[in-house]
Each structure stands twice: as structure tokens, then as C-alpha cells.
Image 1 (tube, rainbow, N blue to C red):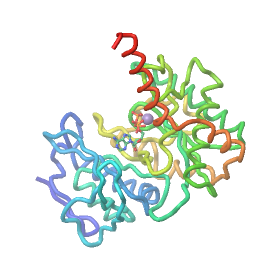
Image 2 (image 1 turned 180 degrees about the horizontal axis):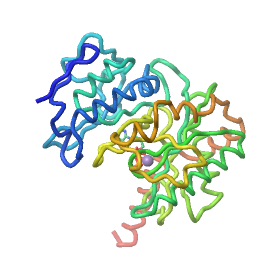
Image 3 (image 1 turned 180 degrees about the vertical axis):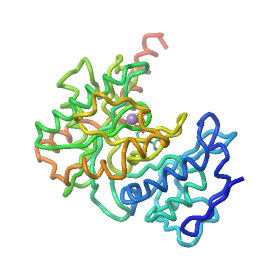
Image 4 (image 1 turned 90 degrees about the horizontal axis):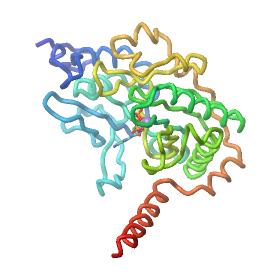
Length: 317
Ligand code: ATP
Ligand code: MN
């Protein structure tokens, strides 16, 4: 077994398969994360990290709580987990050695919120575009163009990256907004973008209401997370969430950039930082409009109950 040590971090079994069906070695993951450390760490620093890990013979798993036996230099922050009903201690990946330590645990995906630990204002908002089952990637590109137009109409600009999985993320750096207002603006932008072409895109949270349209998900802002640019995804050959200019978007396909092709495709620079506009103030009318739009998750819950009642009534119960 090939072992190594970098930055004082012991790296083990680098020639072993990373996980089932991934077609890469653990060393290839480590080398990718190390090569992009200077571009990944600034996105992760200060933000409670969730990682998705793999192990041969196991299903991938999302991990928020820091792994047992972490070295004392790994920084963590206590965060209340509503799902787990307990406090978890999440890693703050503030430097290369923490990234390497995580890499050695086969942490493949790096997910962070749009806010730093202890800060009350988000640094950005995101529209998460998900293609319908079996669709060509081209429809996601078209939907991203709708978002771009809705942003431009509101005097805003964003940058786009592939998720590394099926869809794309449009990210808008913001300043001066609290979580509620940022979430509202995200809802309004999704609604305005979908209204530009209601046959192509939808904000319907309930899957059966989407009818083959691209889903513009406005619920990923706030304390929820998005995968970082340059993070690999747990799919064969480890495709990477790749920044792409608006001009190049029509010719992009998911899976173009993998841990193997990233150095050549993305170069030594930091296209994500280069493409991201500066932090912008959210227009008051956009925020106000968003506050009139119900939160999708809550609305879907009420709608689910209403439909269940209707079905029961129809069945004569
Ligand atoms: P795809 O292109 O396949 O949609 P994605 O990364 O956008 O890939 P989504 O399911 O759309 O995946 O979710 C968007 C983001 O929300 C993810 O990048 C992730 O950070 C977060 N997320 C989604 N599901 C979970 C989960 N079960 N636990 C934690 N975070 C999640
Ligand atoms: Mn998505």
C-alpha cells in the first residue's frame, strides 16, 4: 500500500480504490483536493462543513459531526442540528492540512452554507437548477439563461457552475441582507425566471407538479448548503462542480470535468473567483415580492395534506 505524508498529515492506502464503482483511487482524490486546496479553502473557511464520504463496501454517507479522533488543530464549531435534535460539531476547513486530513478520510464532496459561523448575514444566494428525469442537459442551460435574465432585469448578476451531478447552480454574492430577506429574494427570482418561460421551468416543489420542466429550487439559501466549486461528486470518475462562463454554458456537459481532467480543463487559475461578481445589495421590490411567496417546503406540506383529504373524500372514507 502506498502511503505519504503532506503538511504533517499522514495519507494512507493511496493506491487503493476510493469506493465502489468510482473508477478512481484514493490517491486521485487526494491529489485533486491538494491541487485545488488554494481555490477550495477560501470557499470553505469559516463555514460549518458537511462532507459526503465513501468507503469500499459501504453506501456513501453525509457527515456533519467531526470524525472521532480528529487532531487538536482541526477547528470545529458547535451547531444545533434540527434534524438530529442535538448539537453537532462541524469542521471549519480553514487550511490545507485540514483538507488533506478530510481527504484521507475519503471525504469526496464538500458542502457549505452561504454564511460563516457566527455571522447573521448570508454572503450569497443560489438558485439550484434540477433537470427533469431523463432530460437533455440543454434544458438546464436554457433555464439558467432565464435566471440570468431575471437577475439582469433586477439589476443583479450571478455566476454559474455545474453541480458536477445533473444540474447547475447560479450563485449571486450579496451583502446587507438578513437570512429572511435573502431567502425571499431567491423565491422572487425563481418565480420571475419561471414566468419568463413557464413551459420550460417551474418552481413547483412537489415533483408530480413539474411535468417534465426544469425545477428552479429557491430553498438552498440560508443555513442549507450547496456543494463548493471544484468539489468532486460521488459518481463514476468523480466529476467536479465546474465554474463556467455564461458564454461557454451552451457547450458544457456535466461530467466534462472530472478529477482527471480538471487540471487541464480548469488550469492553474481560479475561474470561480474570476467569474463571481462582487457582493450586491438586493433590490427592495424583489425582497418585498419574495415575502408574498410562501416557503415551498411549508406550502408543499399543506398541499400534501389537502390532496390526501381530497383522495379520502373521493374514496368515500
Ligand atoms: P444535482 O445537479 O444532481 O441536483 P446538487 O448538488 O444540486 O446536484 P441537489 O439535490 O439539487 O444536489 O441539492 C442541492 C444542494 O443541497 C447540494 O449541493 C447539497 O449541498 C444540499 N443537499 C441536498 N440534499 C442534501 C442532504 N440530504 N443532506 C445535506 N445536504 C443536502
Ligand atoms: Mn441541484
